[in-house]
Length: 369
Image (cartoon, rainbow, N blue to C red):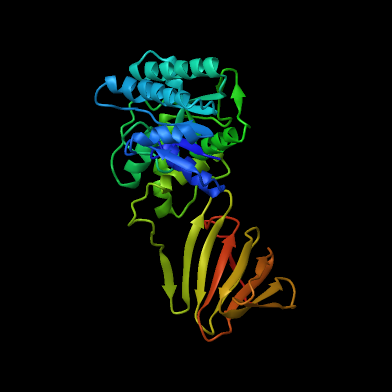
C-alpha cells in the first residue's frame, strides 16, 4: 500500500511514520516543506491513502493561514483529481474550526474543501478535529502548552501560567497514531460527519504545570508518579522526552560504612520503596524483625545466605542465595532475619519494603537470629 503523508516532519507526521514503519509499511511518501514540489504530482498519482497533516499554526502573517492550510489542501485535492485518484483522505483539522479566528477559519475552509471532494468523487474522507495533542517530538514554544511546559521545566526555564483554572482538552500522541492507523485499515472511530480519538483527557493549566514540576522534583525526592493514572503516565513519558541530553542520569545518596552501602532508589506513597544494599565479603547485616513492615530481597550479584527465626522459636531457617539464580525472598513479619555475604566479592541485593522509612516509627526491632 502506498501511503502519502503530508506534513511528514511535523509532530504528528513524525510519530505516524515511525509507527507505520514499525508495522511493516514500506511505501510511505513523505511530503513536507523541504520536499521538491514536483514530487507531489507523483505521490498523488500513486497514493492508496492520504494522511493530510500539513498545516500552518503560528505564522508571522495571518495570511499564511490561508496559504498553508486552505490553499495547500486545494492543491492536494486538485492533484489527486488530476490523476482520477479517489483514494481515502484523512484531514487533520482542529477544534478551533468552530471558532471565529483566522486559524479556525482556514481549518474550516479546508474541511469544506474535503467535504466537496467527497461529494464530487465519492472518495472516502476522514476529518478529525483534534484538541490539544501532546507527546514526544512536539515543538516547544510553538503551539503546545504541554510541550512548552515540559521543555522549560526540564531545562530550568520559567513558565507563564496566566490563568491556572483554564481547562484544556488533551489527547495523547500514541492514541492519535493508533486511531490513524485504524483509519488506514478501515476501522476509524466515526462520530457523525467527523472522526475522533476516543480517549480525551481534561486538565487545568495549573494541574498540568504542578504535575510537570513534580516530575522534575521526583529525581531529588527519589519518587515516581502514580502511573496507574493514564494521563499522569503519558504526561510523565512526555516530560522525560524533553530532558537535556546531558541530564538523563542523576545521582543517588549512598549511605556507606565499612560493611558496604545502602541506597534508596525509588520511593512511592502507595507501593513502598526500593533500595540497593551492598555487603562486603563476610559481612552480616540485619538481625531485626518487624510488626507490619514486609520486605522482598533479591540478590543480583554475589552469593550469601538469608536466615530467619520466628521471635518466639529457636528454629533457624536458611535460604542460600546467588546472583547466578535470581530468586525473590519474602521477609515475613514476626521473623527476625539477617543476610550474610558468603562470597569473595561484594554481594548486591535489591530490597523492596511495603512502606517508606519513617524515623519516628521505623517498626524495626533488634534481635539476633
